[in-house]
Length: 274
Ligand code: DGL
Image 1: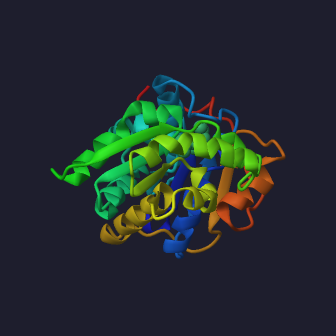
Image 2: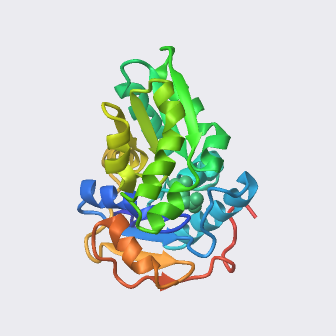
Image 3: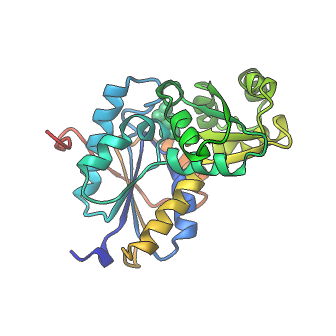
């Protein structure tokens, strides 16, 4: 198949990655997308790097079997621990969420104090620190990182502006406030839904949405390499588990109606490199 007819593949540990896909669909209105959410094995954020890497390779392999022209790793955790490996193993361009967000944070900070919030695995990997320092290119930056594991279930519960969420957010954000950050990287697919709350608790701080940054990077790659996908059915969604709660939640993340997802198993899929 010619590149011009190929969709862009996007994967995440679950449906949270639809928050990044939402931006991709906005900035690339003429592209077709295949989305894979590994809902049977979500969350990735509290699993080991080895396990997440195995899952990420299976997700990439699944998308490649759908003849995608590019893979966007919408999951921060998978990007943090598996992006380098995927980039080497996969023959199409692979875009993660960490590097674009790190570049944006290094660009917008005025006082050089940057906060990063994410899952335990993302923060534990140190991937954001490495990428921000690289993009700061010798400028002095002070990075304060904070895992916020309770945000994912709170968002999935729909408690976006609930007193319990605010209480927990105040606790998580205190070290970042104490550090005087002027920029906060939302290093998890779920956190953009908490933007109104985070903006209220961190007034004057620039919030960097990693999914939105990655959407712009993917878009510029598509344009510069003139890889095109065709018009037609814009989005095909595959999930590895079809629990009924995913559907309404998916529409909150994507901000659009989601067609009935197909349920697939990744067990039968060859892991890349094996
Ligand atoms: N998608 C994950 C991330 O962005 C959050 C949910 C999970 O822990 O799997 O890190």
